[in-house]
Amino acid sequence: MRSSEVRLPTAGGDAFAFLDRLLGLAALSHARACALLVAIGLICFLPGLASLQPMDRDEPRFAQASKQMLETGDLVDIRFQGEARHKKPVGIYWAQAAIVGAAEALGVPGARTVIGLYRIPSLLGALGAILLTYWAALAFLPRRGALLAAALFGACVMLAAEAHLAKTDALLCACAVASLGGLARAWLRRGESSHGNHLDTGTVVAFWLGLALGILVKGPMVPLFCALPAVVLSVRARSAAWLLALRPGLGLPLTLALVAPWFLAIAWKSGGAFYGEAVGHDMLAKVGGGAEKHWAPPGTYAVVFYATFWPGAAFAALAIPFAWARRGTDPVAFLLAWIVPAWALFETVPTKLPHYVLPLMPAVAILTVLAMAAGALDPARRGARIVAGLVVLVPVGLTLGLTWAAWSLDRTVPWAGLPLLLASCAVAILSWRAFGLALPERALLLAVLAACLLSPAVLGLTQPDLPALKVSPRLAAIRDTLPCADPKVASFGYREPSLVFLIGTDLSTPSTATEAADFLTQGGCRLVFVDSRQAAAFDAAIAAGTILPRVVGQVSGFNINGGRRVDLSAYAVIP
Image (cartoon, rainbow, N blue to C red; front, side, top):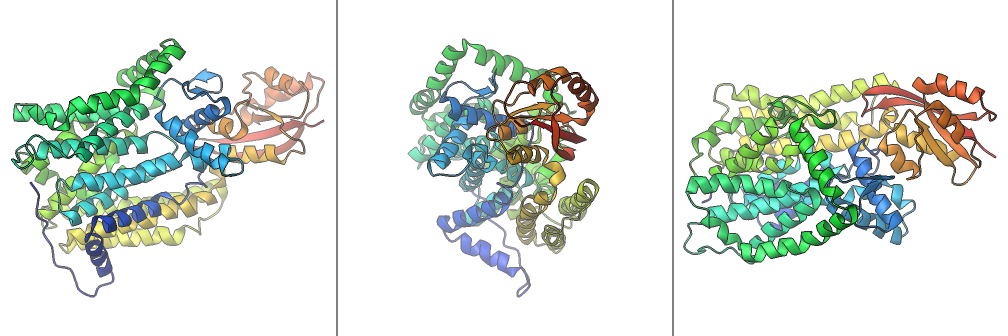
């Protein structure tokens, strides 16, 4: 079943009529549609990919573990310095190690500490998620609507953030959308006599390949995202026979062939410790309590959704009455089954992180465009214009917030990013105005354009002008200025994984001032970074020793992970 798209009148000759023409031209073929979606993705994802510092703490942990795979040649075990990192399967580490290894082979200097290289799998995963959203949306919408839905998802803040982080979630999202797109086709075609119980081989392979790769990337998450709607819809249909169209006799052996070798290898190598850590300490800790200080009350995802799914969130909220009224139709029933059970589950789990609901956002985008096509995004409804006005809050908030942060942290104004920031605010206001003029498609297109201005402004132009946030890179730069090769380095009081990634696997982290002072006495060229909170104890330990190091640098900044200002001094002993 397809929804026919309502084509609303547009004002001829206005400044933004080119957006309507661009959408129409791109919708003439799948190749043009994909080219436009890739262009939107690259505009939103490429700026800042290399210049953004390693973001503590998860990203440099992933990158450092991948780096150690290259250093040791061990592609089975996952380690961060000397500790086993048995929280996630191996997929993302293999992807990162492969990219960095290829860069080394091509002669990229210092490839192993170039964080941008480790982010390439996330970039590719985010681009893949956009294209797969387009493919999934084609089961619900004509080409123009599917293109708009994919663009709306591709422009969202959460996807842009994950594309810039060397973690699992962008790749996971691509895998989940591939599987759910296949599941959608099995559901929507179950009653078509021309198809019977058979799907084309490409759809079946997409479903099972997404499932298998998703398991290698993040364990049970993709199976969970698929199982919840499958169960809900099977109960609704009073039969699970429609799932046979996915040919489990072919797919299950394929999945096992792809995932079993590593899971068996890590079980043997770790003596089963991987499963105890991944299930017992990681998964159950998040289910049973607020793991790693990420507790939040139920309803948190609904509140932050207005920022994480910007610029589409305000319009998605307006689609809720449409979704409720059409819940009995097969397309809307599937989209609700994709969104609601998993969303409710994540709201009940104490540990909450914004990216957990990222694989649900493609369905939200598709549902929003379905509502628009049915004329349900109506500015005449009570409160609709106020809700749509939320599209303006994020660019305005970021413009004010980043300007304040730059001034308070570095006594500067982010002049390089301000023009695009202000332009994004202006286009968001025009999007709100277009909605008020009963031009919802134009409003969505302008919202996507606002995102294409905001992402380069924030990530490409503004964040490089905030040196206070780049504590670890500035510390690593001090090491690089020492007049000796390969100095031994320790950090006392500052233990962020980003410093391990930039300095090296052998970075020492003494726990007492005496240990830090003793580190400098062990011969050769040595360097210690000392947090100001530990400075008095360290000075006392130095005074009691026989070596007097010299201060070779100081770094003051703001530790995003700790949420506080830090001041560090660098002490060196140079033979």
